[in-house]
Length: 144
Image (cartoon, rainbow, N blue to C red; front, side, top):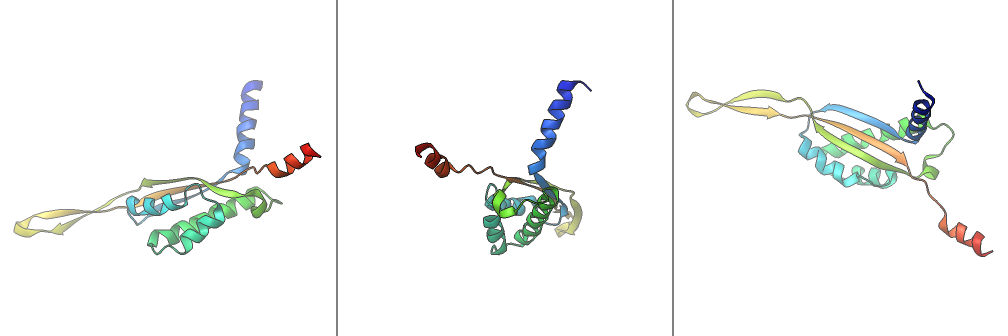
């Protein structure tokens, strides 16, 4: 491996250090219903997102809350010694993709059968830390 490639790989690895993700596969809810809840927390701070998910009456919010807690724990395992409150975690990405579909037949009139598709989905949630610059403290140092 050349020096340029190695440096680029090390830079990518360092950038991924602050990011952690969690996946939930084959959730037995339709992707549309899960996306409605996922759109509520996309881009929000972790504390705000947990509050939204905890008090949302939809069934999908319980599963997403557990997934978010898992992503936070993954971040804490990756970043030993850093505090979650100081690093300002937020939901960077959340993807809801269609999973496998169970196909069943439902009896219909005149000997026909209607197809019933029981959908499932895959959810990927990425948590990242925001770099907070203290603009107010910088201004104080400049004026002093």
